[in-house]
Image (cartoon, rainbow over all chains, first blue to last red):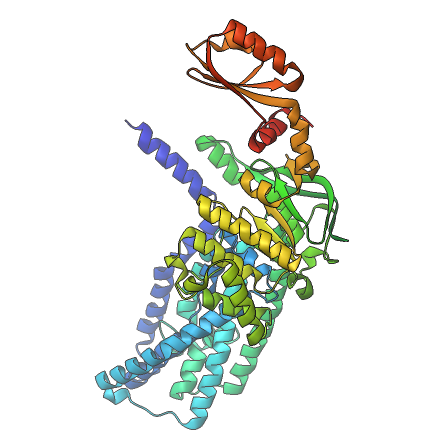
Length: 259
Length: 326
């Protein structure tokens, strides 16, 4: 009678243990509440936030808008293509497969555009006090920084996608990264709630440039725009170089494992 | 003129090995062991421009691995391969423009959109001008009888129509060399025949070189005059299909219908038994013993009916793999 549950457990346990490296990241990506605890303990200790209620409303509205245009999902598609072997078709065409993914993402952004406008109208109808009109410079800078944010997000995730050439579940690494991104990119709270020293360090990492930086430009927070754009360009260049290297190494491995 | 040159081509894969059970699982987790599999071992052949060649072998023989090395998807472990003057794994654009791979089990077309959309993407990727695209599309769609299905989402097409659409997508850039891996897999008899007719037509119109793997012998006999046979990674035959069949003309398949069933022991004295189903028995008898054996059978056994046939191609290939009769 116990043979069936025992056999099922042993076989599925073996199945889980096939993903050795991935298990580590799955466990880590579950540690979201621990980091969350740190953020809110910090906020409670300070007893105040550096932004007003209206600024918070504008900030999260800007985050919502930025996320509409910087959201990336390339790793799930890429991993499937590698596992199922359909990447082979793309490799036999005289076009880098990355362009298919870029085009799909841009098409998706275009689809989201009208919805984002409708939701914006709805938002300001609900919170009229949060209404503001950014000036032309803010708009141009915000569009430029959102474009760079998308490029950076795409390249970072595309680099994690390359891990699919070596491991069965590259998405597990991405899940862990996403968890860090939720806290350090400004999705869960503006980086202004973190201690100054910590924020200073954070501003040298790619995280703030995925959400916080473009959102802050859009609502006119006091940030160093030139320095921020220079750091973004640095990370984009670094990720691109790393991507080309990983792509070449990964293809070699894909091919040696049987394509 | 040779368009494909393969010399001592080999491919070895590392494969993880795991014992069943909890103990095997733990040791597999902590200390993963690999075994090297020789998928292809020192094969050499060359193909001429415009040839249609069948690539045969049992599952896991190394056919697909060889096709992948020829298309540049995988790097050889050893040996050299030149296709249309290129080293495939370098995947130069001018090389990729000259080849195409169709895999019966995998699809490149966008599932939710009509074939026409995927075809337009391919036309853009291969830099085909609109006018030429239109001409080729009309021509290929007509050859495949697919004109009415181009505007339907792929998911709404039958398996046969889908394969035709895959062929169309793979050929829109007019590749000089076409690699086909099980292109008729899972298709019904009519769809198989349609795909075969199309490939024959395409080859004669454009003098394209076609390399085909298939488990359906009808594909091979209908299309290929030359075959390559691979078994356990080793090329065991390269030559005309007819020559192979003639070699096996030395055998005949003798089928008898007995009045009463007999045990295998009693029948084995007449020759090799290939199957027994009730009163129906099939033998494989050497041609030089044929008359003598049939005479003995008719004298000894109560036979209601009998027939003598040349062995079908499937049987020839089966004997080749099981007994190595080359």
